[in-house]
Structure formats: structure tokens, C-alpha cells
Image 1: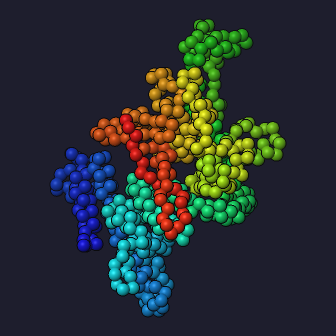
Image 2: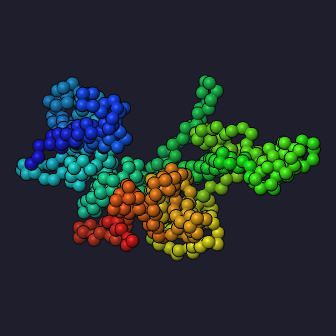
Length: 525
């Protein structure tokens, strides 16, 4: 058995080595006599290596803290009364004692207690050792492959649904979630945990929907300054059309702003006619130069102009104005300048649509809703049901048109779930050709399309990534300088959703037969 501090010592040694090698080849801090290397003089590569080593050390220290906190909790059990460890040290409970020692808030200490208790070895009444309650999480924590936050999210969900699913299926999902969380950012981990909970406990989705619906609130308060504060807490079903409508207006405004700043006011539109200084007309040629050499103002006057005043509103300000615009439109005011059409996509399996049992998702929200709620939404004209397992649409347009159609964008959204690279909300992505339309004669087909946010789109082109896609999956092939073996990385919705390609055999003692995750296999090149 290894010593509990072995991992800490190994990671501290790695951090010392990475820190010592992080200095620049020359300059301040490069000479041995200059003392410890300061982060300000580290090379870029050395800084990143030191950051990774420090992160591993922090994970190892969190594992040690969680184990100690779990033992504190065991010795502070309510059964000990005033003789419990925490009360003997003047604290109300174990979380308060741990918080006082770490300097964290009680919520952070409670997280240490939860993870430590869920991953510590157990003893039977006869003194025999048993594995941890969540062995896959415990093993990943010990190896430094899992963060404390990810471990807490997985363990908390599994314990919440334990009475309503079989042990075998819970263990299968635990292993899959741990595998995914070891390489995914925390936001995608939380999304995967929510989908796992919906599949492990399909009967609990609708009651949770109803409970959230009953908690919806919106308050309007006029402050002393005259400002009006509107605060809302909405369940996903209520919030979906509100969010979609606001995002549609804001996105349209941002597109106009980007078009105005990217050269619509520049010369070169050709053949534009404008008024000259004498009340007549002047023309410009294809370069924007005035054809009448006697009229010095004609060239400037003939150019299409952008907005006179720059739009400097922030995103929160744009959203506030969009809300006011929607309200004016509803009350019948004709002054509203934008008539944005907001579409909400509700995604569910065909079986769930027919039976009303199971879960569904609404674009823009991570938490699943019940299939029954999705069926109610699907009758609304502004809600588009994306039914999985039904008839496919003919969505290959070849080179008959350049832009992807609305149906194609819905299909790409089904496959990619937002930005296919980083998972950003689907409202902030655009459909791009993998093989460029002009340069590479790319087709406007699903297998040549991908949804990307602006940042990932530029990064793909800047670093030389290649993208492979079909109707079900999208893969990103890194350039040789990032991965000499150029191993493809799975993107799109398959990256953060637990796939239900097959079902785990139902144990004899239970009738639980909802889908369990399967391994994601790399398609042939």
C-alpha cells in the first residue's frame, strides 16, 4: 500500500523541476545565481508546463484534504453528541471545522466532505474492508485524472438517483462519466452528468420539470434611483422562447455591427450614383474613383455609408433593449425596427415522442426536460421538434446554393449541438463549409458542413486543423506540430452526450432497462 503523501511528494518534485526549467534561455532569471525563476520571466512553454504541474499538485492536495475531511466527518457523527470531534473543538459540525482549517466557505468544505466520504474505503460491521462507494471516481482521484468539482458532480448525481436505478447501471454510467470528465472542461462535464441523470431516472424528469415550473418567478422593483430592476428565475420550458427571442434580436444586431465594421462603407462597390456638389449627379467606376475629375466630392458622396453613430452597446445592454423591443411589439407599437423570427428546437427520441416517457432537450439549455413537456412544446408553431430515429430529410444541396438552408442548419445543430469544437451555445455559432465554397469548390452538404463559433473557426484555419464529418459525427484532426500522430478527436454532440447505441442487459432482480452508455469508437479513416 502506498503512502497517502506519495502522490503529493511526486507532484511537488515535478513542479520544482518544471519551475526550474521554465526560465528563458537568456536574460533576467536565466543565470544560476539569479535565484528562483519568477513567473514574469518564464518562457511561454515553460509557463504552461509549470501551470500543468501546479494543477496536478493542487489535485493531489485536494485528494488528501478530502480524505482528512471524511475522517473528520466520521469522528464528528451526530451519534457522538458533545463528544464528537467537531464539537470538542468548538465547531457546530464537521464542515465548520474543515472550513475553519482551510479558510474556505462552508460550501467548499462540504464539497470536500462529500467527495471524501464517497471515495474512502469502507469497513463492514465485522471489520472487513470494502471498496469505496464510488470506486471509479476514487481511482481517478487517486491517479490525479479527475478534479474535485467533477468528482463531486458525479458522486452527488449518483447518490441522488441511487434508489431509482440498479447498481449495475449506476456503475456503468459512473465509469463512462469518469472517462469523459478526465479530458473534458467542467461545463461539458456538468452537461454530461445532467444527461446521465435523465437516462438513469427517466421517470424523475417530469416531476423535476413540474417542481421547477412551480418555482418560476419574475419580480419588478423600482429602485430609489429611478432604475427598474427585473429579476426572473424561469424553468427551461418557460425560458426557452424568451431566451431564443432575445438571442435572435441580439445576434441580428451583432451581425449588422460586424458587417458595418468589416468594410461595407469602403470604396469599391462600383457603379454607385450619388449627388454632386452642384445638385447634379456623378458616378464612380469599379474602384470607387469619381469619373468626373472636376467633382472632388463625388467619390466620397457615392460610397455607401455605414451608421452615422457607432453602436457601442454591451451584450447586457443589447439584451435589455431587445426585451423592451419585444414588449413594444407585443403591445402593438409599429416603431419596433426588428422583426426577428425566433425558432426553438426541441430534440427527443421517436420512442419518447410516441410514449411521452423519457427525456428531451431544448437548444440553448443543458438540463433535459421530460418527453411530456416536449410533446406540449412541439404543437407550438415556433418550436421545431427534431425527432431522432424518424425519416431523414434530403439535406444535400451540392453546389446548387452557397448558404446552408434552414433545414440543414437544424440537422447540423442536431449533430454538433452548438460549436462542434468547444460546445458553445448554439445561438452563437455559424454553419461553415469544411472545404471552402470558392477556393476548394466545396459543396453545401451535411458532410461538408460544421457549426463553429467565431473563435474556433479562426483557430481551425490559423493552426491548420482538418475536419472530417458525416451525418452522425464530426472529427477534428490536429496539425502535426500539435500531435505528430495526428490522432482525430471527436467533436460535436457525441463529445458531451452519453451515447445510447446499445442497452445494458437487465439484471434479473430489476426491470430497469433504460439505455446505458457505450464506448465511442473512431470511424475508419
